[in-house]
Length: 337
Image (cartoon, rainbow, N blue to C red; front, side):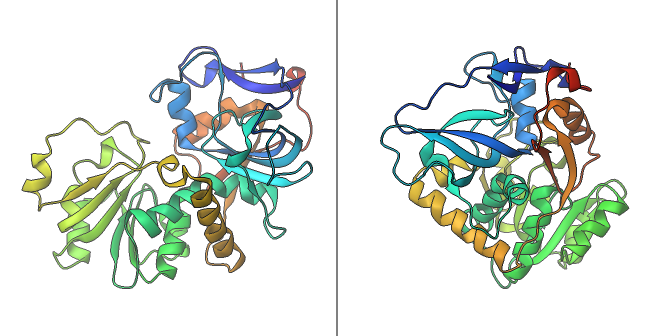
């Protein structure tokens, strides 16, 4: 038997329960893995509170992890028992052990440890497709990046500056502004003390930016649109402040024939070949020092409720992980029920 964080009803952090679960042997095309480190991401909050509904209850939270392969099912050929692997965007990660479709697993190079992998797979692959595919960033690109001191924000800032872009980041405090600047942001706006659309126009001499990467949602809309140059692209890929309210598409016309997209990672990694290609690009960027991961918070998995509280209160910076170096049983729980 194994233990996992399960949700029996959607709601606040208190609905997360540390429970014993049975993990059977893998079926065809599956692998059974033991997690060493599990990642924390804001999408976990959306699953927990019901914003992103799951097909059934109860379910195991979490979409990102790293560990080792314990067993493989029939037909699995490119993953073997004992392989160090990681994955992203497959729900069920808040567990000691789990079953997973083997074609979603990526082998880890020796240069990437488990903590780094669990911290970077979802965020790093997201940054990879955002900068390389959703809007191909390069020399001359001027972009606005909301939540620039978060896990995705710090990675995106590093990678975008390496690609030659001018990065304007928004943050909520002076402490976070320092983190964004250290990552390479050329301009940092504190949205709690400054009007960010006005500052963007000032920074760009009234021209606006080519692309806005917006993971905040409600609080930055429609201000994000006011930051774009004509025919600019608004990339809405998160809702940390709540969902963007419904709006008429005529608003895009009125603000300069703008483009808008709502991408998700699975849409860019559905084919295994594309997943492996993007992961290889990410690992290459890590090995070359183009991006560095800042794991600024570590929790035990049984204390996931507190991690969610801290994340929602914006008390975290960079990346956060759960470490499973030792087995934590219910008697050791501190704040999960």
